[in-house]
Image (cartoon, rainbow, N blue to C red):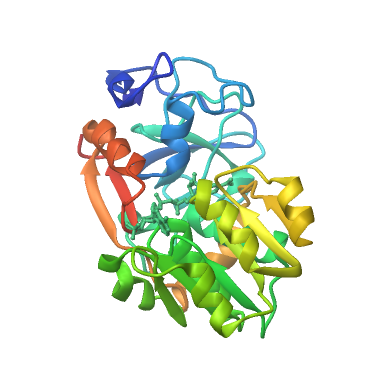
Length: 318
Ligand SMILES: NC(=O)c1ccc[n+]([C@@H]2O[C@H](COP(=O)([O-])OP(=O)(O)OC[C@H]3O[C@@H](n4cnc5c(N)ncnc54)[C@H](OP(=O)(O)O)[C@@H]3O)[C@@H](O)[C@H]2O)c1
């Protein structure tokens, strides 16, 4: 089968389209004909070697965690899915090796769900990692509830667009940040106050209306934005960080909890999110499609930090 691989850590140029053996299905696993995958920042962070000391890699690595496709074959003991089913999910092999930038991939039964009936597989591929991350941040870690006031950094990104909608549906007041060109786009997901970070200081904007601070902040920008995010969380509040690791000294100084997101693939959660999508309660991020052969270009764009919505790769038309 055709797949994108990298044999060593490095820049986007290490990504190559190659003919490789298709993976073999084992007990509890599903072999999927991949129609679409989507590009997430973790894909290029892994390729650059940023997590080389934390995660195990089995080179050559096929990148990619998001998949939307059709079940080809099921392993022994798989009972939820059958050949021909349209499925989607976030699949992470351990060690990292068999990813989703390929014509076929494997997923454990417990991380997959039937794809939403009202979505194409192109649209479905954009959902699993970002929706799971948003839900885990807000509810598993943030314990968000109605009436709380929150800031979602990066409203124009994949996770941000999902987090705004889930927080609004839970009854929160939502501030979100983006650059000027994305103001309307971010407002379309229901954010109450969209802050243009190129023209306004989010700390000042929030201090004017919420001088006591917010209950919850989600940040994946990192660096200065991460450090300043501490200032807008009220004592006892929660800062979930997706980019930088928590800084315990700063968290203590501000009397807040700073927690690193560990988005966890979960087929049952994905099935709940599927039901919300089918009921029209979650709108999709904007989607840009590229062929699988342009994976390097897709990761270059992701690496700029300014993709609006999601990039999906068409693995059926290489
Ligand atoms: N730890 C985990 O489990 C986990 C899970 C998911 C994601 N993450 C991490 O979380 C981060 C976000 O993920 P993602 O998929 O949402 O990324 P993404 O889709 O690539 O985010 C891109 C968006 O970030 C916005 N942005 C860039 N700089 C900004 C700034 N200073 N302030 C506000 N917005 C800014 C851009 O909007 P503008 O063009 O308008 O600037 C762009 O639309 C990434 O670092 C990712 O690796 C971690």
